[in-house]
Image (cartoon, rainbow, N blue to C red):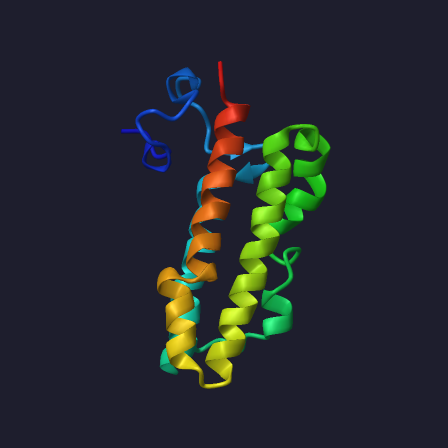
Length: 147
């Protein structure tokens, strides 16, 4: 099974049309690595909630969508090559929302509101935003790799 197949349901449009041997990369961004980096935020935030984090995280920085590799790609190469595709704007907006949710969850954790922060991680806005950014990025990747 290909690395990307777990992101798409059986009936997902275009899945069977993806180029054989499609690269994990589009326009200089390794999609798999970008998704993994965003998925790691859940554990990073959980570590803050649990008091085991070795990082000093600032909610104002975490809330920004231009600080990570994906955000920089969206503003530069992604915008240059994909700005006319409808899926690109969905990636950009879902990514911005994800970082706002991550910053909010971090604020809750830093204020000692651990139950609220945990709820964000498990089934709140953060959890939904995390899934959405991954799905939107995979859809853009799929669309870029259709035969």
